[in-house]
Length: 202
Image 1: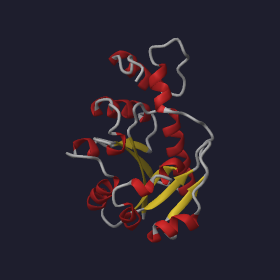
Image 2: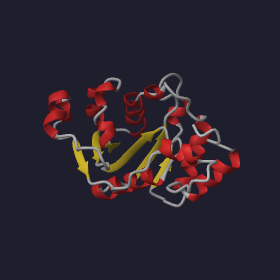
Image 3: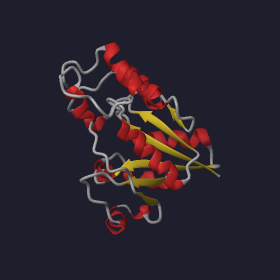
Image 4: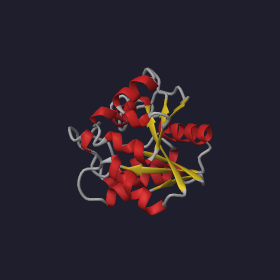
């Protein structure tokens, strides 16, 4: 049975931390490939402006182009309305069929916010979750998860992630400044500069 990892996010912009998390989960869980899915209308980030989806998708495609086990999908961008992970998983289940095992890759910070997500319990019906450790974020215990989400029992795989603390917010704030800009794949950084993204520091 094929094992496919799903890494969603705003990717505004994509950075090395995203690539390292995806690779850590791929190696740890023996995934056949990882699909990066930029959010269309991320409702949890409705309090700030988000860069146009076409730019975010293009940056992801450039960042992963040298890894044949990574691919990008525009499925959330094409879907109208707010982006909900549960809808994406349902669509992937329809597309890929029963012969595929899905692993939703989440940083530990996202794991701690699952209670705010749309129909989070349903997520565990459709896939396993790869919970990747993050610097400065305490791991969620299996006991707490099962208390809040009974269907998570046996469906969460803990992954020791790279202890590299990168923030898209910090990267956006440093574009156009004199501060050194690290952590963005070279091709994506060239794209940012070519298109004048984040020059307002937001």
